[in-house]
Length: 243
Image 1 (cartoon, rainbow, N blue to C red):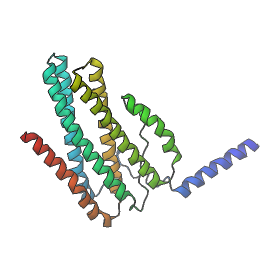
Image 2 (image 1 turned 180 degrees about the vertical axis):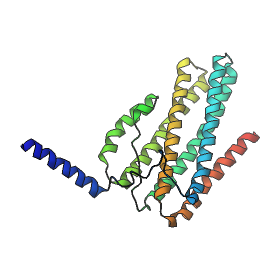
Image 3 (image 1 turned 45 degrees about the horizontal axis):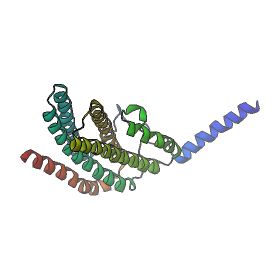
Image 4 (image 1 turned 120 degrees about the vertical axis):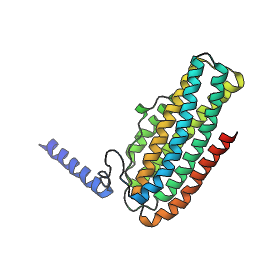
């Protein structure tokens, strides 16, 4: 009987803590897995989404074509495509860094909890991401306040993108310098892109969640902060095409 009463007391305490910390707020704000946005907020989201998805598509096509050429024995053509992919990777990484800074700035101005979810290592393929997320999964479970959880989520995404970019550049530059390009290298490059693609998708979902929760008075300021992201991406792509 004492055990039953103790368990009931713990359950009631847990419910009370969740209510106090407001962990259940915003949980039902997703429809079909996506945060529903007004037309005005959707107009802010779409240019950023299109820019990131375009850069990711170009990067993916370059790497996939490189792997196909390598499998066909066209090693020189394959490596030229990897060089193109490395350039596209840097552009996308820069856009993600800038977007993360903008989100971190405006997250402090929200008045309602921003819905987030944990990024688990089971969805990733590269060793660097599996090891990185293993150290952060417990920390994510220990942070309860909504704004702190969101800032931690941003930090994890930013560091994940930085870690993947560092490993990709290290592998690429070593192989470019030494011309040592075994099959294992191509597998790693493929895994790095797979995980980087997941991080970019998670960043877009996070941005969408932030947009949903921002007060209307912040939208003009947010739009102004986002303009350099799109302009920088379009300019970089145009320069690359001219070359």
